[in-house]
Picture 1: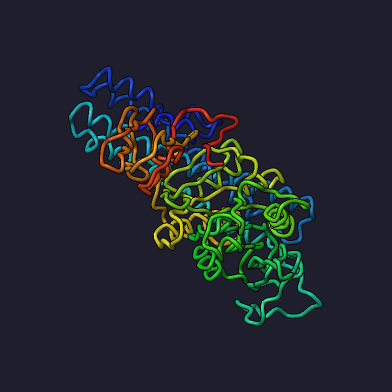
Picture 2: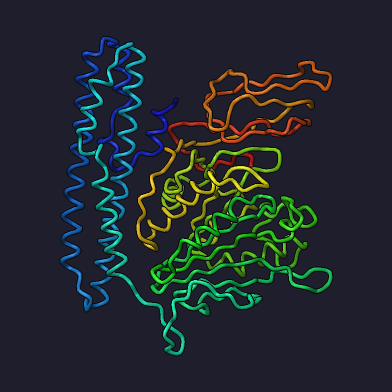
Amino acid sequence: MKFEQQLALITIASWAPHYLNYRRLKEVLYADPELASFATEFDSEIAKVDHHYRVQEASAQAKLGELRAQWQSDMNQDSKEMWQADLTGLLQQLENLTDFAQANLTGCRKILKKAAKVSKQQIACTLLPLVTNMQFAKSDSAETLLREARATWRKCTAVPVALANGVVNSVARKIVAAIPTVTELDLQSFPAGQVSRVWVALAEDALGLPIRVPVIVAKGMVKGPVVGITAALHGNELNGIPLIHRLVDELAPETLHGTLVAVPVANAPGFLLSQRGYSEGTDLNRVMPGKANGSSPQVYAYNLVHRVTRHFEYHLDLHTASHGRNNSLYVRADLTNPCTARMARLQNPQIIVHNTSPGGSMRGASMQRGIPAITVEVGNPSQFQKHYVKNALIGVTNILSQLRMVPDKKDPPEYTPVVCSRSFWIFAKSGGILTVHPDIAAWVRAGELIASVHSVFGDLEEEYFAPQDGIVVGKHIDPVCQTGNRILHLGIVEDKLPAVVDDGHL
C-alpha cells in the first residue's frame, strides 16, 4: 500500500532519474492488462536501474583502490584531511548505492505482485528472473565494498588515545571495584580500552542523599565519535535496559573507535516507583532541557542534560509504549535532516515516522544542541521483550558500524521499514469498554472499522473508522476507556515531508 509515496520519500534526490519509474509502470499496466507493453516497459526500467548501479559500483571500486594506493602513514596533515574527505565521500556513495539497490529491488517485487493481481497471470515467474540476474539485485557486492571501505577507514585513520602517565593499559573488560559517584561526566578521565561504570548525581532527596543515574562508559583505544544511549526516561519503559546490557557485553573496547556512553535508567525516581513520570508524576520528556532553578523535575532534567547528554555527539533515546498501549518497533526522527534520516534507516525498525523534534523532549533538547538524535520505540512497557530487544540491538550496532566505531556485522535486518511522512493519534469521544481491531503494523484503509466502544452493559456506543489509509504504529490495549483516551496511532504515507510535524505524542 502506498509504495509510490514510500519510494518518493526514500529516493536519493540526485539519483532520482535512475530509479524505477513505479508510477509509469502502473500506468502502462492498467492501460494494457494483457501485459505485452508492461513487459517491454519493465525490461527497459530495470535495465536503466542496473546501468546506474553498475556505473556507481565500478566508480566506487576504482576510487577505493585509488585511496588505498594513496595512503601513507607519514602524509602531512593537509594531505591526510583531503584523503579522509575523499574516503568519507566514497562511504556516502556506497551507503547510497546499497539503499538504491534495496529500494529498486523492493519496487520490482511490488509492481510484479500488482501485475499478477491485475492480469491474473503468474507474471513474476517470467519477469522476476530478469531482475535477479541484474547486478543491482546482487547488492552484496556493494555491501562488501562498503565493509572494505569502513575497514580501511578504521585502519588508516586510527589515532590512539593517550594513556595517562604513560601507564600500559591492561585492556580490562570490566571494573569490579566500588562504583564511584561523580557530579560531572568527564570523558577524558576514563581509561581507554575499558568499560567503566559511574553514578552521576543529579539532585538530592529529602534526606540530603544524592539522586543518581547509572552511566556506563566504553572507551576505545582509538579516537572516534561519542555515541550516547539513554533508556527508561519514562521509568516503566524497560526494554532499553537489556539492550544496553547486551550491547556493552558484546563490545570489545580494545578495538572500539570512539566512546559509547549508556544510561540504562535515565529516570531513577520513576524507575524505583515503576511509573512513567518523575517521583511526583511529571513527565521528564515534557520538560527538557529543564531549568537550573526550577521545580524538582526541571532541575533533574537540567542536570541530566548538562552533566551527561551534552557530551554526546550522536544520541539514541530508547522508549516503549506507555501503560495500557502497545507499540511496533518504530523510530521517530526528523527525516529532513540527512544525518538523523540515515540513523533512522540504519535502525531497521518496522516503521519510521517523520517527526521534527518537539519542544520539551529529550530528542529535541539534543537536536537543539546540534546533536543528531532519534527516538527508538522498542515495544511495550513494564516488561523485557527479547524479540524487540534483539532487533533494536541490531539497529544500534548498524549505527555504530556506519560511524566506523565497530567492525561491520552481517546480521540481516528482519524488517523493511515503512516510512511515514506524518502520523497522528485518534482519540475516544466517549467512555466505555474499548476494543481496537487492527493488529500492530497492520495497514488499514480509509473507512475501515478500527475500534468499537461498548457500554458497561454491553451496548454498542461508538464505532471509529480510519480517516485515511495508513499503518498502525501503536494502539491502546486497555479496555477501560475514558473520553479523550488514545485509541490508535496511525502512520500516513505521502510523497512529501512536512517541514514541521508533530504526531501529538507530546
